[in-house]
Length: 212
Image (cartoon, rainbow, N blue to C red; front, side, top):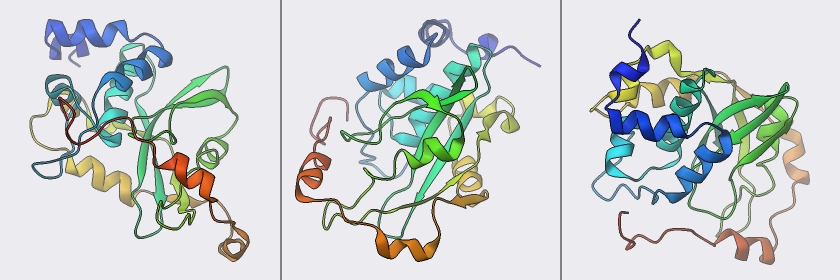
């Protein structure tokens, strides 16, 4: 099997190898403008993200997974699935001392990095529940999560692909997902209040910013 370092350009490898901890990976992702997909939807490989210097959540998660892979960790991502009318979110998983954490690329003040304090994937996924809501009416929308999804199943082609990785997105979307709570408990869920909705509208990048 070809070493990852042989697949990457020297400048790519230098950037990724320097991202030696989840904190450094997250800090790097935070410097990248959000990908507003102005010319159409994309699902860029890590190589294209490094070249274009922008990413949405799935693209950021794959870049983070690659950086973890270079540190000899499994390249794992997790899908957070919502009700119709809201967008799913994808994060990269890491583990420290048997506890899970997450690296997340988002344009919002919420749905961000998670420290490694969660014993299970479900605990980690549930930590996103209270802040995952529609700005329009405060309805909380997160319903289920996938299991850890290992990108190694695609070999190494996903790392440097020039085409959009729709096969990975489709496989992740259709992978088994697990409900966060019984459906009948939906009637007990309180909507986000006006203060939470105000905070939820905070964004890091605007569509007109340089690089977006």
